[in-house]
Amino acid sequence: MRPLANKHAAKNEQGFTLLETAVALVVMMIGGLGIAAVFTYAIRNNTGARDRAAAIAVAQQEVERFRNLAFNDSALTATGTVVPRTVQSAGRSYSVSTRITDTTSSVKTIQITVTPQNSSNPWALTSVTVNAQRAAFTLGPYLGS
Image (cartoon, rainbow, N blue to C red; front, side, top):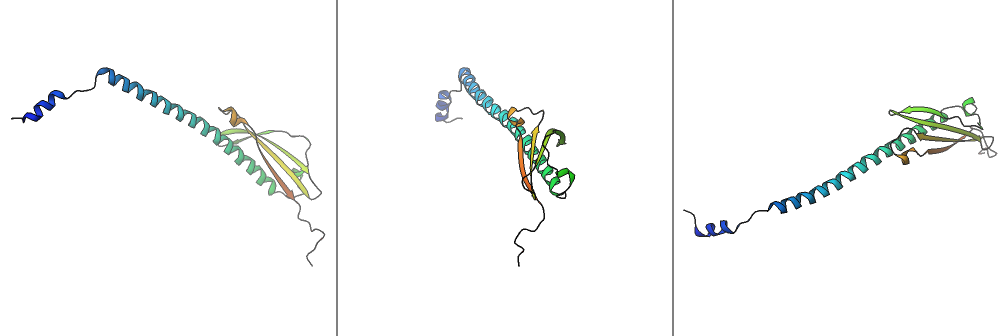
């Protein structure tokens, strides 16, 4: 036999109505769509950032290639015109332009510009430029005596 208090409590209990449930689902759906939009935005921008980071890596590889050459190597000859070439890295294509100028007789300035190609984000298609200077191993006027 049930106690009397529980019998009266069962009569006063009420559940959610269909309208309250529908409103709660609509509110949750709006929140879920907002979160999905943020995830889409983050994925798109992370992909663009990856393209730019890979472009910087390509530029650094080019700088290292020029650092390993002798100062009087023909590849380090000052160039007036820039001829872009296409480089493949990390499954993507990049346009690489190199400009070499003679700053002084013993210093060369190397400017490497890398532009990602075929990215889905317009801001990721902007160029990355790395400047480096290369000096000859010559003794200056002070010989250290």
